Length: 165
Image 1 (spheres, rainbow, N blue to C red):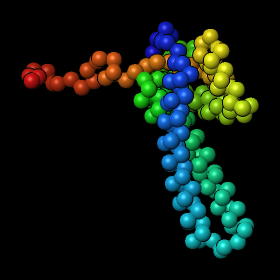
Image 2 (cartoon, rainbow, N blue to C red; image 1 turned 180 degrees about the vertical axis):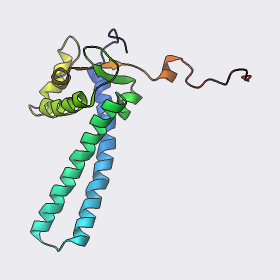
Image 3 (cartoon, helix red, strand yellow; image 1 turned 45 degrees about the vertical axis):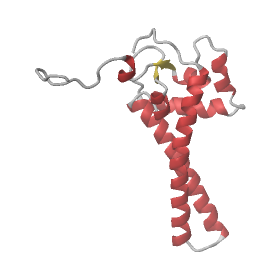
Image 4 (cartoon, rainbow, N blue to C red; image 1 turned 90 degrees about the vertical axis):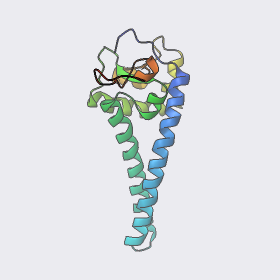
């Protein structure tokens, strides 16, 4: 990944985030339902057990979100939403891979950026490098980086000597 890659704009980033929220929301809803059903079958019915299953459901949703974002940023440099929109998260100081610790710091930064009425995300509009607070905290950038197929490169090549019809 080149340091000259164009920084992604807020509209592309927001659209990618909406896609990711839909995926995380679906997974979290399924997990919360599973915890609720399992808790109601295994635990006696009382207000205390209802609070416990609600806390476990909330914890499972938070865990799914953290694993999804941190894991995909660290492993692939992009989530499903970023992939669909041809974006990638990269270290601001150069390099193609985002270390796990930096991906985790970025996730925490996202939470902090959302706390004051999402001002940390709105900041992208005014930042000359199009970086939000979470990007500044973690030392990351989101850049345009379409998948290989969209760049016009052949992802799969035929074996040598094979005729291509």
